Image 1 (cartoon, one colour):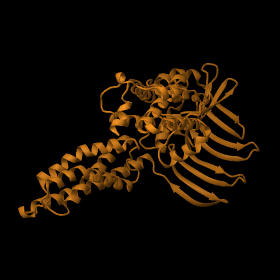
Image 2 (image 1 turned 90 degrees about the vertical axis):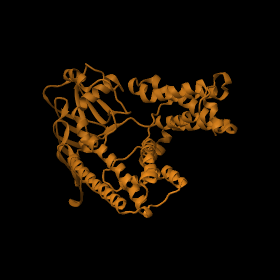
Image 3 (image 1 turned 120 degrees about the vertical axis):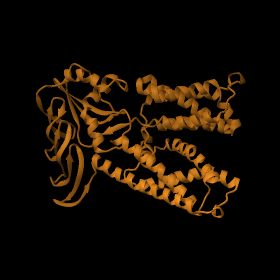
Image 4 (image 1 turned 60 degrees about the horizontal axis):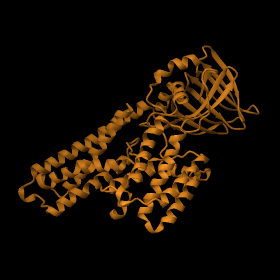
Length: 464
């Protein structure tokens, strides 16, 4: 395998790999445009086809044909069912449907007939670059972090100062031009980083300056360096000073909107085109407030949502005016309180295990020490960290709102666990010694709980 992979250590392949990673993790974010979009397609196809050709040298034609076919389907609407299934079941992925991306297939004939000579090969280990290549295939399709709004969310601006255009990725909003005013319907907006916990509290923080975030999207695209405060002057120039009532007629619905400056403020009602009420609620400074009611076609209540300071605290489900069920939700403050309680329980378990191990150590005699051979000690020190990580993950799974690692981050966590716990096991086996047959289990539980405590503490700090 290593001998096969040596073929990828050539300047064109490494250059394309470097450009692909640089583009996906920096250029697309800073300068999202036609060029950065196509760079990923051209370099990605070259790296992908070349990589698999190295692993399957006797299947070169099949690799290139399959790459072209899969890329064409991937860039078409026909791949959406697979993307939806994968995103919901395994890990969220995304791609933009753009028929012009097919031009990137022209790189495949070049890659097919390209044969790197010995003069442009580099004599270094190919393993890190092979792993980096696999990572680049996954990272290319990871979507930008966004905040989705379930309730209708509109922003009001004056027209004629800034050009507004519709967007569908990563932010999704629709522009409605009304004489001297512009109403923008926001379904989803890009955020700077993934939320530590995707809850109503986080949504409210995004809504507090939603108009500034929108202006940053409209003027700077994907740039994130500029602070939101830098757009306040532009917002003020676009702000309608008086309260505004707008009836927005769309294809299938009619929304009655009350604005205070740029934000929704006051009653909200949504009707069908045949004048049937479907939603009624209230906004306060752009944030959902009080009770929201949803109706069916017979004007019967389907559900009610209760909001407190913008956070959803309860949902009621109805059938023929009778309440069937209700579901309560924790606010961010309640989640933080519960997390302190979880940490206290874990800390008690850690202290209990430490006391138990200390007592075993004090009570044991020289003849009670369990002898471990050099082979067993080394083998245990190298394999038990994996067991610790597994026990930690099982324990985390029973903790509500537990820390969770992204698919691509679990490998980094595993490496960190190995680096930290392997020396500890050497100390346990060769310095402290096992004093009881259950000591090894106690040590595994102790280290597992310590990992969970550290993760939960970091998680708590991130949501405070």
